[in-house]
Length: 424
Figure 1 (cartoon, rainbow, N blue to C red):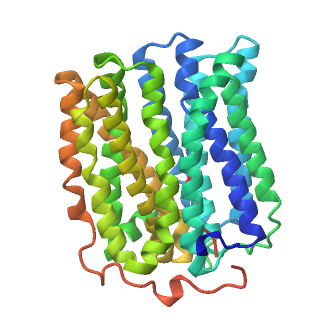
Figure 2: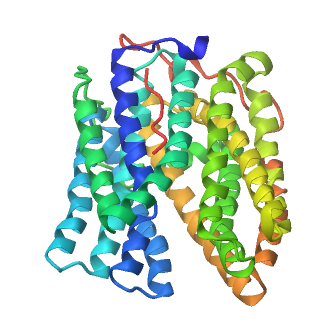
Figure 3: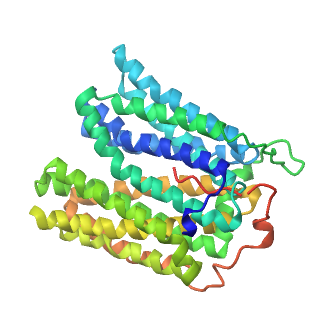
């Protein structure tokens, strides 16, 4: 099968590094809010602040990192971001062991990890484009996508079991060690990477901070895909806390059923990601972006009709499965298109702008969803989100010439094979 062919030893190390980090993050999923509740007896407002303020501050910190990453060798940047995350996350179990853990520390850790994640993703996306051949970008992105979903399916149940047996900071240690192992895997690539040049300028210009957004908003194909993704991802993520309240508090689902409702459908991510290359080869990139981009928006409204009992659990699993299959097929195609249509000297800034905007959209829409749920009910807020997301396909590029083939200068064939974007 084409998707099973080797992409080379260097990609193998990059994929392995990503996999160990993704599974570590899966095991540590939700660890900081859990520690805030179990160890620090945090209030609901504090837990909400930890989930929103930390990533928001991290996005602000990451804003000047785009140009900084752009004009540096990408592999050392990835290693540095992994080591940064390892060091800052390990402060939690150390502080817990000596009885000095505090809520402010959790906020700082959350912000630093969020900023480092954005910088890592920007560097890895630029690096991937130079690591595999242009024709293999979709295969590489699909492999990252499948790893992401499998780690989400397996990691949280393992993390919950580990916390029950070994204590509340166990998964944090596992997450921290996964960043260290990821850094070691990237180090093993041993690639001779040339330092990017600044075209004669030695200092960063203020305008370089906005170059990523400028490219996204002026490119005829990327503009629609970018705005569509902000709305879709923001609305989907905004329904997660609303659904938790609906299922656990109002419909009385036990925690194990709630966990099953979200873990089991993640296996659908393996299906969609493995289909990506075949369906693009058969139907073309534009048709997949438009058709599957529409399909991923039609399922969310189904969550508003969940009822108690087994039928309600089956409804949640079916809706989540449909969403995840659509997303796991769409995401690698989108990531590949984005890399193909971004100049090499602007990839890091473009990916940074994309990540910061996504974080901001999720934060804003989640806050609005919470306010609406407080004023009405969680079910009403989910209905509104489900109706709004039905308008998102209007933002997708309508004409195939908008999603045109990349210009030759955007995807030069280098001496090395080019690199896939890290989905972290």
